[in-house]
Amino acid sequence: MLIRRSSDIREFEVTDHGLYLGRRKLLALGAAALAAAVASKAAAAPLTGVIEGPFGTSEPLTSKIAATHYNNFTELGFHKDDPAENADRFPPLRPWTVEIGGECAKPGRIGIEDLIRPHALEERIYRMRCVETWSMVVPWIGVPLGDALRQFEPTSRAKFVEFTSVHAPNILPGQKTDLLPWPYVEALRIDEAMHPLTLLAVGLYGEDLPVQNGAPLRLVVPWKYGFKGAKSIVRIRFTETRPHTTWNDLQPDEYGFYANVNPAVDHVRWSQANERRIGEFRRRPTLPFNGYADQVAGLYAGQDLRRDF
Ligand code: MTE
Image (tube, rainbow, N blue to C red; front, side):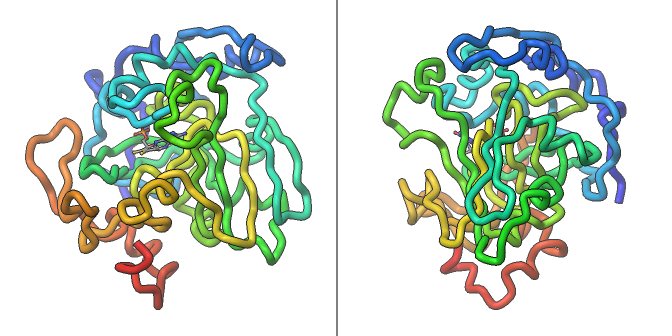
């Protein structure tokens, strides 16, 4: 399978480093409290030591400017350009700790570096499909979520994994409103979470994740609609029962828990049969599981995916 390295990205695909967080630089900030952390539009640090991941696509990349300026991150506003516009409202926070708990033998609070460092950072070019029928091809950098989670030794009662995003209403403009119940929460079944396609991402286009894409770490689940990819994660919990999740709780008829990309199941307000790549005019047929059926269809053997949508 052909995988393009970020070093192959053409000139026009690379832009505006000013919006990026420089992770190495941010580490130097030390133990700043959330409210006291300093806002910065630090130049992005290239991520070093990144290896080619085993999964990818040779399809043309979405331009970096589109992938970083057409976002959904309601904490930073409700329009697609708000997250980039408001990125500097969300200060780069270091150390960033993720609380890991629930049904596991070794719960704990852990720094992002400790969560990520034991594993090689991989670059994987994934097709991403938003529920609103647009799609992108993004070179993500991260580690397989399963590799990062195994060290906490989930017990046999761990059937699901819940991801909670940052909650900082004092600084995040969206969280000053009640348009969503905060914090943003998503969840996967444990076999989905441990599947090698599922990525805990810390970067894109060869650099640290920009704020608007979910800095400093977010979930990437390429065979599911975009709302499953929780951003700016602060807590991961193994659970025995299916967790409540933000969009599924709000509009269960529109946003199923599974959210597997499925051209045969329409959203209540629009067809999901085709999609438009950001930057292209023509629409294209949407593929089951977003084109990753060979890898993941087996997870749902025997399930009625019209009911479990
Ligand atoms: N995570 C948080 N914390 N808040 C959000 O509003 N939006 C989701 C998901 N993760 C969201 C979130 C939705 S609806 C989508 S489509 C993707 O993030 C968008 O990711 P992108 O901006 O990197 O394309």
